[in-house]
Image (cartoon, rainbow, N blue to C red; front, side, top):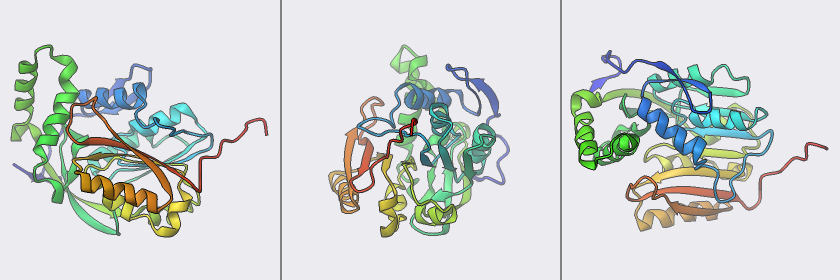
Length: 286
């Protein structure tokens, strides 16, 4: 059963949680927060294969969710400036609670695509990281199931018990799917709006909308970006070749790394570095 966001009143409560590193955040899903913390803080999955975070970097966090990546960047260097984008109102509200008071962080309630427009999103309160544009909702249940299995796998020693628990969570009443109409814009539009002539790191996590986001980078703006790191899901060989071509055509070397930690088929992380605009390391003594 689906409801519109305006009709829905039974979303999980927002509560405060202390992360293992002592940082306090707001959340509405314990398992999801632990999963994100493990991936971003412990494994540092976005900073592999030469991806770096220089001092005074400008970072765009596309698909910021509740702000774990933005908080990670801020914990590494308070000289960085972060622009964090999240389209779904309930998730954006928590993002603002977690990061809105940080002096070098700008939070924006919009998603990224290939044009200025609006789109319907399927929002899952108990699995907000797997919320997706409605046009990609078909066959998304498998991704939701994999996500739940990964979020709760450390809590169940017996795989059968874990699977029964996930079956329970996948019931429509508990999944509590809601539809929100969200604003979308482009990377290039935001670079103009915020007068960004240099983006040191562009992080993208947008659940099946990755190609649309890349299409929203105008030809003249690719050269202003030094590094791009992104998650991609469910790509076949033709789509992987297309992704590689997009980066190579626009002056980037890229590595598409199959991510087998989560036991999700066709799940990749992409690490791309500009050939013409590499990250500049500033000597603090100068």
